[in-house]
Image: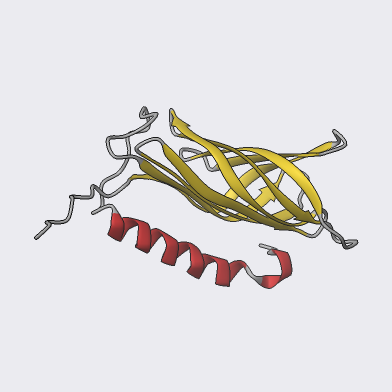
Length: 166
């Protein structure tokens, strides 16, 4: 299988490392596919190669979470056609095994420069379908859609206990 710039194997190692870190933090507990938010929060991860329906590839790295109503995370992707994107997650929800995130950040197109964009993305934990819709400030949009060859998971966030005070 063709991988963008031959980084498929390296990305697999990163995905395994990310999964190991999350699994270690969550004591192996998994969020229910029906859960919209778990007690204490959740983390959502999608890491891998998005094989687009048209045959192109994009490297995707989503790490997002919701802990007690506080949302954070980042979405990054690289595509030969669209360039490199790195942006902050503003909203995240999980419903019926589908991760849905929105946010904004900077896109570095292949021709150079930096463009501010918004994104709306979904990733399925069940069939690994992924879709990232990007909207530029001038209103133009494009969508990358296909199957994510990698890891798509949602885990309960670790429960923290208050530290004892002396």
